[in-house]
Length: 362
Image 1 (tube, helix red, strand yellow):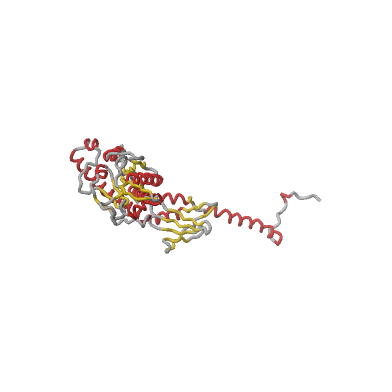
Image 2: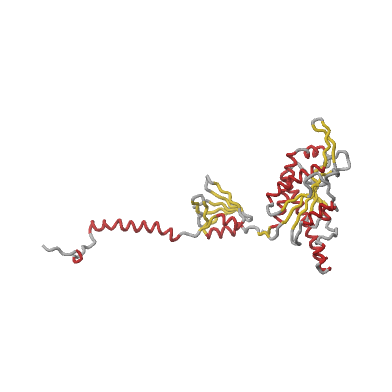
């Protein structure tokens, strides 16, 4: 019997138990393919959470064990858990978002969530001006000891001199401040026991301004004393130049290049700005000392005085009296290296806080 070629045979209808069973694997394969492929086609664009931090200036507090995070911004805080569609704003309000993903140790934020979080967290501060240099002036030096106090240490007579304390503090302030203001030079008027005329100190600071737009700060460190042998007076105080004191703050060569009337107006505006900034810097230092050295009173506050160094420095400038050498309690403290380090750290923190505020607009 001749066989019929396969191409000419009538195909059997796809019915019955056997044929239906044969179709199941094909349908299952299609379903599996769709399940796998659909998330790929519908996946939302995401970005590393660090881009959100850069954009807003926020800080991420991440609990790796609990897999939860909190974003701390200038305007708000947001708590979240990867994979969850609910974020908590300000520890009280719920916000529906596309879930943040956690993949291979990386937090990925969907675009819609990034936009919502950015609006709540606020924008990163914009730096509109920079502090070029900060001059730390150690008062007195060389043949000028400043104030001094005779005391005993381990039964031996010791003369504690202001010039030594101010130099030690200035060095410590410089070391503590440098890493906090990496874009600014932090310089000393003297780094050894040498005598400098008052004019040399301010001339050095003024010479650092290469351009009229350069921002320089001047901080002079001193130790206080009263006319009494011993005094109950104690604590830190800060001085700045009286606002009613007229001085030439513009560089002479720059002022000479301007119309005299224009020069006077600009000088007055700049002088007013320097006075305001000096007060703000002084208050920032006192605030930091209050936080970090609660045993050091700051009630003496900020005062005006016509000291040469704050008068002749053409920049925001303050003079800090760190304590009274003829107060028995503060004499003991100022002789302690640990206390001087804490004092220097607080002064540096105050200056750094002022610099950050001066340079940024939120």
